[in-house]
Length: 268
Ligand SMILES: NC(=O)c1ccc[n+]([C@@H]2O[C@H](COP(=O)([O-])OP(=O)(O)OC[C@H]3O[C@@H](n4cnc5c(N)ncnc54)[C@H](O)[C@@H]3O)[C@@H](O)[C@H]2O)c1
Image (cartoon, rainbow, N blue to C red; front, side, top):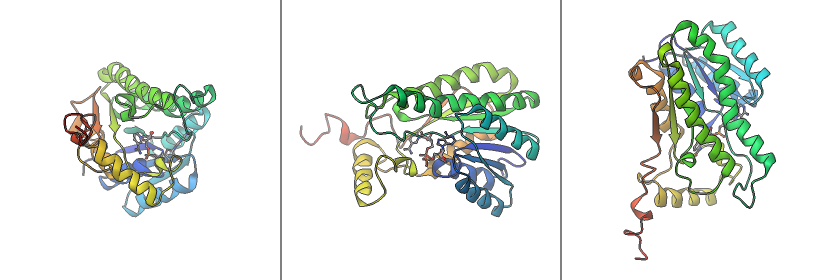
């Protein structure tokens, strides 16, 4: 097993890719702290982790609130006495609009808080423990929109680009302490993330199919498990000489699918 006796925190681990990462880590021997905005979902995942023979701990914690983050990390240390792995996964958009006609200052503050400041707060609370043990793995979840936006969502994409800057600077600062920091850039992944933009149903299925055909070289949407594998690599000893890197887990993006290029377009 790749993570035997390791302790991991996965923020936003109640659903979507966070849940898949938490379960993959548990399958590989880790005890996992699952944090989320709503405790019920986190509890369910913690139970699934227990059923795998590892210890799961569910904690309600809003990553954008420093007091809740501090409390979450204290509870983790009280139960497990160490933190080996942190996945800064929690995030989301939750608002419609975000281009120069529709973005608001209020949305900007809210979205930057959840998608950038939150990872900063959790990292600041966790790193002192990693420094003490002179080891650690931090994985930051960004987004394709940070580097190759397909739609204009200024606040969210700026926050996710910030995640890449945060990763690089942390990797630089923490490398001498044997703390590895890397980022994953997911492509379009089928998770509850999309619910606030389009509810599940046949219309959404049609939309996903068209999106994948047009924009994803591998021709399909990603599944949460597609993110869990690369996250496991970055969390384990298999990546001990890897830090400050970005892995695109995006079905071949940011290259465009053939169907999306001018030279191969049907209208040509
Ligand atoms: N699904 C995609 O296509 C996609 C693509 C690129 C990047 N991402 C990013 O990947 C990450 C995971 O997304 P997902 O698709 O699994 O989404 P999801 O909506 O399924 O899960 C997000 C999780 O984050 C938690 N969360 C949200 N705000 C929080 C807060 N303030 N404090 C604590 N927890 C909070 C939620 O409770 C939930 O458990 C997010 O950062 C998202 O922005 C998603």
